[in-house]
Length: 129
Image (cartoon, rainbow, N blue to C red; front, side):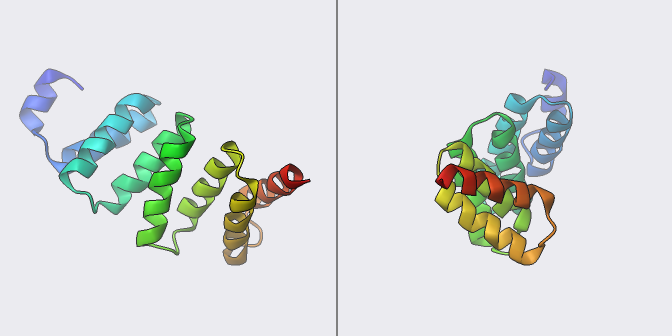
């Protein structure tokens, strides 16, 4: 972010969220993670910010950190299937196929045709063989 933009916008939650969104869209994932992290420092209960941080960490391949964030999203909103799917994918990358499988199954209970969850479940089952 430019110094002028920061000077004019200050450290508001809205500014950090917007910067994170823009940086994510521009595939500037490290910067987006910093913006979302700052947002959560300002407002730890910002649900969208936490989910967006989790998605950003997933893009960076920071599987454990992304898992932690997705878990917090699910704790606050157990019906957020996209967070559960993200958690399952991160768990697969951490060689935790059994835990991932349970989350894929919960996703498929909500949407039996979800291609990502179906593929993830197949990968998890293959890992368990």
